[in-house]
Length: 399
Image (cartoon, rainbow, N blue to C red; front, side, top):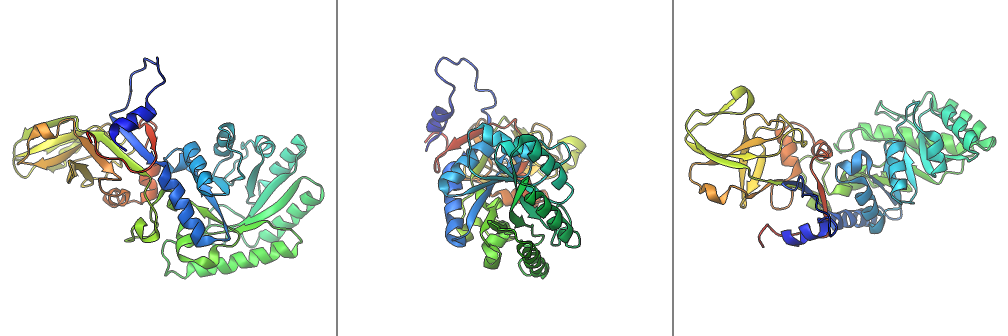
């Protein structure tokens, strides 16, 4: 698909005179990659169901669009951290089963129950959910969450028997139904570490407790993307596909292609300025970088306000098929790359600059430059960067 097709798909309606504000920056999301990644994982985990996790606006890719594509690809469930995220998907017309699991005492439980959203329960929230169910005269569907070692959300193993007892009481009163039990793994992205086995043993113990209490469970789920790919014994009735949904690998040194996954996001802009500078020219705030020879510097109009990590000095930007390093501190709206001394500036001014994705370097390369993980890089791309949705790969500008 060429650049003209991209603009045609995303152009305003006929008669709309609004300018194409922000089109010099764009994140292009390949929805066919989302579907392909779901299908790849479905083949791996069958007969387990796939929950597509679209929290944080679909890891920065667009929650509504990703959720719809994932369901078209065969996902059966949608996962969100917050009820507000799930309600927005319901408002967008998505009717698939959903689970939200991260709550506060201000969470709109009544709206969630009325909208048919399943709720994760860590313990303290059970009473509020039961009260909300009573208020709307609709039983809540809940998944009991047990902390098997991550130390974040979920009931401790010591408190879990008490949570089961309280849930049984509310279920007998018709206020809720316990349909699932789940947990989250801490180090599944490091497959050789023994803590995952310890967590799985604790999860098995928690399942036994819930089943012994007489609950008729529909699903047990603990597998995140790294466990989906490396631990078949974690799949149970459902897996939660997060990072892999977007075609990224959770394993250090392993490409998404190893698992048949396709990255869905391509982040790009256009070169805003090119100029020749002398030896010793300082670059950007703090002048922490000085040129080591006469060279050309190019200005790339994306910065930390767009989501680029401020500390990612040395990260790659690809122009005309060649990769150049970011030099100096990344600023709010822009960063600078070094093109070298032997270039024709006319070939660069206005040229497409690929931050990461198809035709450029990987998200993970940017993550390494910022001493972080690929999850963070994609989720931090800000709303100032318009998202454009395409089907399949597309060529360079001008093709």
